Length: 207
Image 1 (cartoon, one colour):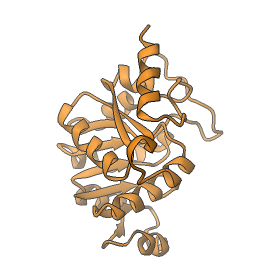
Image 2 (tube, rainbow, N blue to C red; image 1 turned 60 degrees about the horizontal axis):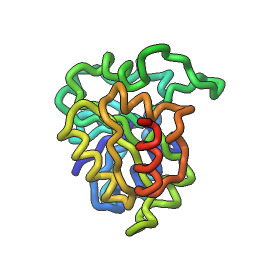
Image 3 (spheres, rainbow, N blue to C red; image 1 turned 90 degrees about the vertical axis):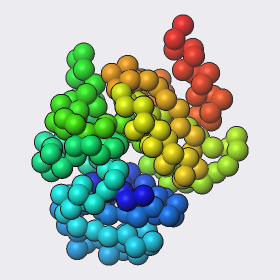
Image 4 (cartoon, rainbow, N blue to C red; image 1 turned 90 degrees about the horizontal axis):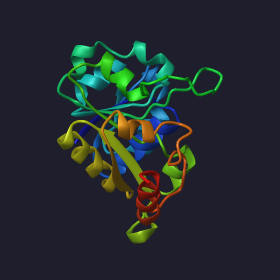
């Protein structure tokens, strides 16, 4: 599958390398694509780099891994229409504090900017170190990555990518309710959870 990744920091770069290892073709979008020679070499499998817009055009799936506070800098929304878009961003300020969004969620705000995109919240609840070191496990040793969204087929596609890199996908529900569960500060955010532990925790939250 062709995957465009917007942002080449800890999450975007690590996720790109994992997906390339799983034989997906990666295109990194960056404001400084000429600086990504080492990342392309580490990714292998024909990974490419270019502008943010080029990455969106390239990908059947597009990963948003830029700072959430800079979401207005994303390429034109028409480019995202019909694409599966993974929102891996969290609403942190430039000072590292959680931005209070009131009754809405960070992914709902992204969805407003990208009408027509098949948005799925994922890869935002796991810390960079775990994403880097706990990939490609098998059996009961696999950790959980949560997904939320309103498009069932899009969640299926994203869940498949999660399985490809050795994690267990667990659906938390809609973009609103499930997305809220995945926000920073929630009981499931940044926790190392096996599938059994994750399902037990989600069940306890419903009581």
